Length: 173
Image 1 (cartoon, rainbow, N blue to C red):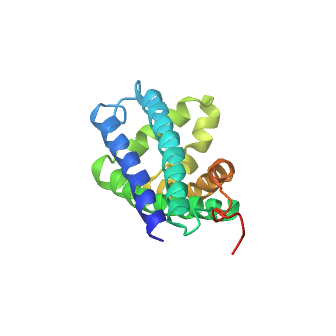
Image 2 (tube, rainbow, N blue to C red):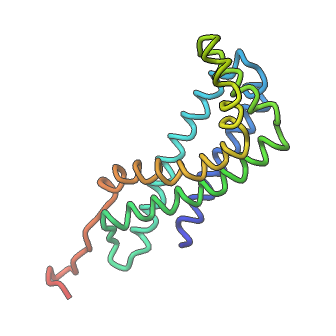
């Protein structure tokens, strides 16, 4: 369990730092920069997810006595790592939305509604306010992180898996 906690924590930390940097640069406060900030956050999130899942699986493989990693174990390590990252990120999202930048969720709502026709936006405004609030978004991070991380792990584990190493004599123990 040490590997998922280590790499999941690092994955969440990179996301938190990216979020704070984009906030400090004004991408979470200005509706004209909001789309760009979203793209930056998504790119950093995808790259860090892949990187830390690969590192977690490689660490698990190295920690194995025979330097092996089965496909299923690799996917499991990735799923656990993503779950840890999601839990940390969900707590951070709650703190960010309630304390650090309470206007952020209003900006998300404004941006979402601006992409809809006026009558549709009026009808959806109440429900959208709920779904773009800090509590709901934290819940979604908690749910979606393990799902997306597991899907990515299904691909990464194909390349990181390794059969058990046979002894130098070629005979199996």
